Length: 366
Image 1 (cartoon, rainbow, N blue to C red):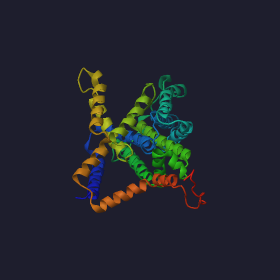
Image 2: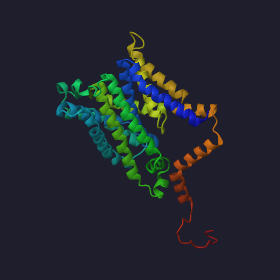
Image 3: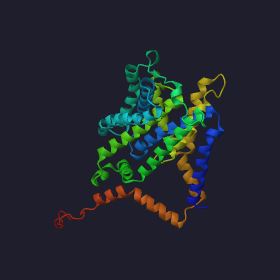
């Protein structure tokens, strides 16, 4: 069996399992699966920013919260149809992403992480001040009837799963196409070699701020979907936005950074580890976070480049690439590195095309 056939077979099996899952599992498990899907969307947004563009963010919980409160308020206070609120949630989160991304151009690395951390810490305070929720708290609970299934043959939990899955498929295909486009190569070039990327004409500020906005939009849509699954937008816990930000990052690392399927795999593992370890030892619920953390450490220790990276290494060992596949892989690698390679050539070549000839060498300047 070749690798291509293996990928097609695995893709068909995964698609069949995803379509059959809501009919096989009960409502609580469907809710967990829906949660894993919207976590995967937020993690995919963070993966675009951190994995493909190299900007570290631990403030995506704030973008997620903006999306959640946008959908909840529009449904609860203005009577909007829930599905129509998702584009608005994405736009508002993207706008906040631009506002954060522009000043973040002056910092990077750990300093950028600290800036975004401040956003996650600040969000619950801002929500408490401006959101007039239940009992004066930052809690909005739309009427449950607002999320009823639009298809009569699907129960509400099945409808929520299907809606989350459809949105996730669209956004993951968009990310897959983006990563293989000229914009995606520019994002990777900025991540790997900023100086070289700017030398070949890539607008660093435009790429960075655009990626920040797109990443925030993904988190905003995920937040909007969370309102349908959880039936509330909640900022009463001041640590919730920070905890969500960390868990999005953990999902990306567990699944595999700079991969398309990694955030989905990581989110699925993260959500099911969290729900299954919660109350695992009766009477010792306080140990649940420790068990959850130990399980995550074990996964990262065994698979340091993520689950997708580990599966890729296993496939390489079991199914060595044939000559044709190696040529295709080399071609794809060369396409991904075009921007950086081209920039390196431009930097290394002392006489680029069209430049006037330099002075003849002298003894002082050979």
